[in-house]
Image 1 (cartoon, rainbow over the protein chains, first blue to last red):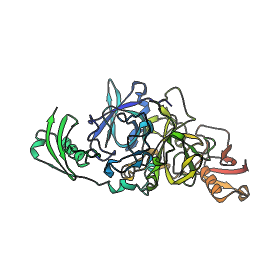
Image 2 (cartoon, chains in turn cyan, green):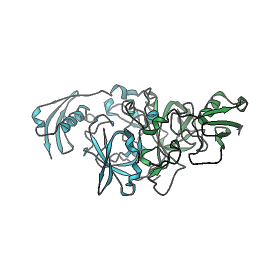
Image 3 (cartoon, helix red, strand yellow):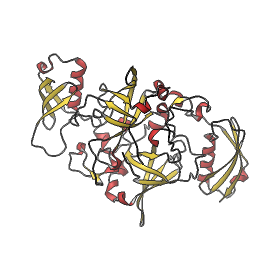
Image 4 (cartoon, rainbow over the protein chains, first blue to last red):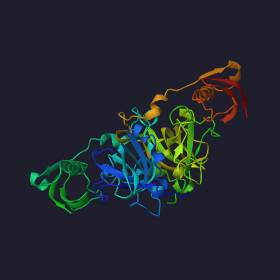
Amino acid sequence: MEIKPIAFIKTNFKEKFGIPRQSGIVENITGEIVFEKQFRHPDALRGIEEYSHLWLIFDFSLNHRDSFSPTVRPPRLGGNTRVGVFATRSPFRPNNLGLSCVKFEGVKYDEKLGNILIVSGVDLLDNTPIYDIKPYIPYCDCKPQATGSFSDEFKDYKIEVLYDESVFFGIEKTDKENIIKIIEQDPKPAYKDENKEYNFLFSDYEICVEINEKTAKILKINKI
Amino acid sequence: MEIKPIAFIKTNFKEKFGIPRQSGIVENITGEIVFEKQFRHPDALRGIEEYSHLWLIFDFSLNHRDSFSPTVRPPRLGGNTRVGVFATRSPFRPNNLGLSCVKFEGVKYDEKLGNILIVSGVDLLDNTPIYDIKPYIPYCDCKPQATGSFSDEFKDYKIEVLYDESVFFGIEKTDKENIIKIIEQDPKPAYKDENKEYNFLFSDYEICVEINEKTAKILKINKI
């Protein structure tokens, strides 16, 4: 089946490094969903304001591969344990479809782009193609009795983030909080990596951070 | 983007009439997910048994349309109120992708077909193409604080099902319970329909039922 993007999401994640490993983890990070011209009809959103959360079905656009690998190595398991692809939410999967639950914050109207959906708790790369948007329906989507394998153990997993207050000089409070939360999620790659110093982009910043086993130290933040 | 089925699900729903309007509503109705040859690798399911629920991304295969309609008329609103397609889970949508949460019941091995996933609470037509299977991760997918518009009001909506005990003569208890639950969900079409008598197929049965505003009467059940 041929599917085509109905929209693209604009986010502050300019590269994969730093993107939360699930949606909803860094609650205040927002994204803007801009519809493709064909789907920009205002009526297509009628009633959406009555829902608090939305599902996005999207393209893991940086993870296209030609061959099928039946297993993946989840970063949360240290990167060496192999798990079946259908037992994970890994981006390396047949059909490259991602699924995220985001909070619906509102609609803003733009003269050129029409109605734009504002959502928060995003874990999507800037410009990710969106194939579908569906409301979160609590009585069928919320399963308080569900159990979740290793994801249960790691839901509160965080590393300690150290920094000198001066690195945040001139940076807005929300940006500061988001940067700290992104690093707290331990963005280092799962594979053994001798490098402990990483530079990554978030919003208008280039962040230089040293990440060890259980701590991270923010070394420098440059406005770009 | 071209996507192709990784599996097909076998269910007892041989036609659209009678399929629950959301997953999980008729809990005991099971389905069997048979993988396509290319994805039949046993390792692809490694670890899946540790999850209680799964997401299925599937094809609303009977609802393909060439044109985009920005609004739909949800049956639960009587079929006359128009709501934006992105504010509903309607099958009439761009890209025809469906999303259902099902309970994972286990894996059975078949010599010819490999590992088959048994799931319950299904709302899918027999032979629906499946594009992805993902584990339900409680800490990001379960949002007890979420609110859900009109879906909240209708979550316990049921009509009364009347029948003479004799119509179920020779029919197994589970089948009987499932048939009653299917009809309780009020499967009549939303559009004004003078006809009150419907025949529909479920499992090995052809069921004849008269459905009025708030009650239904099972008239006959034939084993086929």
